[in-house]
Image 1 (cartoon, rainbow, N blue to C red):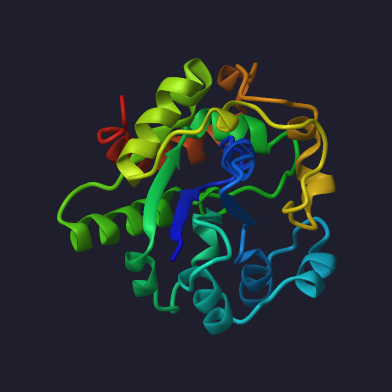
Image 2: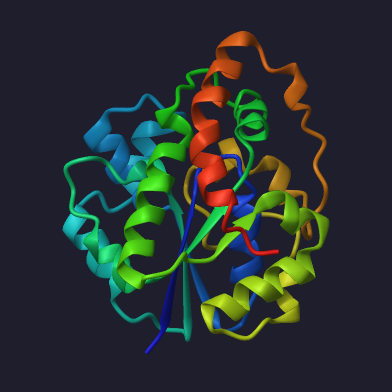
Length: 239
């Protein structure tokens, strides 16, 4: 049997670096954004490489749910999930059967990073509302808050943050999680050439120079809308 770990995040939130961290463990199978193609088909988003992503990925909800919940070929099965891919009208209760964790980051930093890569941004695109919904569902099912990890805590002290996260997930910390080889990874999604240029140059977690003070007014308004959802989860972050 495998421990199926679902890490729930929005975009531009060191989520790929976190996937690389887990994916560098010899005992871990990593899956990059299982529901990306599904989301593009059913929501109709105009994203970079849209047709290539749809063609390369499973777009059936039932099939994807089965793959996420079934045992994997390694002891750990790390799934990098984007919360906004969980579209309304589709049953999310299967999520309760996974080992869930939540990766958060301040809306200002998320939006400053997102704006560097893509201009069509709204509140839904950054997934804060859906992240809070999924967090609430899991917390209600478990009778306690699931683990929440803040990106800034990871960047400040990766060993401490990852050790705490592993402990909450009931798995051992592995030194291999602190670094990874430079360049693309075999488990990268087909969209990686557009989004992963910076993380491909990395070999570990490192502080990032993103200035949220430069947000233009439209993005600042989105950040203001997202802040209550971020603060809700941040109150439970591992420290």
